[in-house]
Image 1 (cartoon, rainbow, N blue to C red):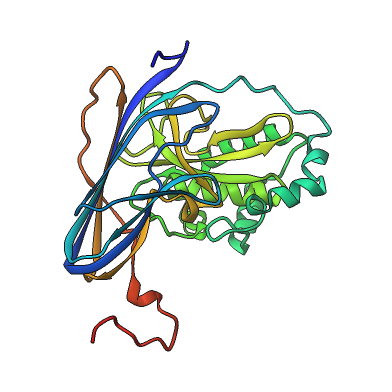
Image 2 (cartoon, rainbow, N blue to C red):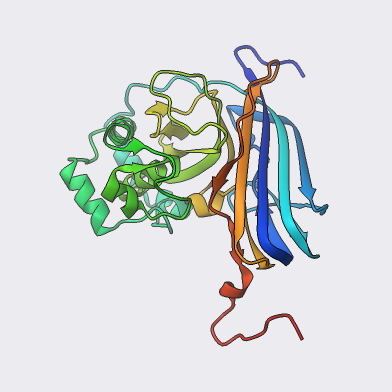
Length: 323
């Protein structure tokens, strides 16, 4: 396959290594690891390995993400998911300086609310709250005369007032945590910008994926980890990607794997485990130029995305699966 003019090609390897205190009886996972195909990103090779061996079942979720269902139904002390992909990306078309005076009116059309309900309504991690209202008041954040300029200004404000600090939050942290401390990581920035943009009537969605680090000035992302940014549906433009963690438009460095209302819809791995005690997750992500060989970052610890199946049973259900 010949690369298009101006295109960039990347190899991606993503390793998620789960380990358990005691052998788990069963684990079921949904994987969102195959990069999305869209106007700026195309996947031309993808491979998935599971250890212990399992047969991933492919399906597409409600947001059009390529998913795989994995069921390991035998005792296991660990579980490793390894995906490899080859992707070609290009920069998006240049955006106009503004969208015009009638753009807000176009977003307010009833048909937009009906078609984009999922991306306008509050969600688990991107929702209004007293803390968010106080934050927008104190920082004088309000929509301007143009939706695109308002979003760019908002992203710049979050980049300025928040401090990127891995380890201060985890994947399930509510937005109140970064609003209180001013410190967090990419998913925190994204949940805040989604909540504010939706309050303005802009359809807004979470994007999980990868960022190829190019050592640009002000670039913020944890090496060896996934990344997140946001997309906004704007009149005449379609979905426009903005990365508030880096105060930039999404470009050839941004490789999407899933979209959703927030992190809960777009997590690369999510599932339940029966038995096993506490689970631990170590992750390594390598994004390298297709023709080159970037250094391999070490595994780093993340909060496990496998929930204890016993804690998910409805109240009154005493069954344990054991006789």
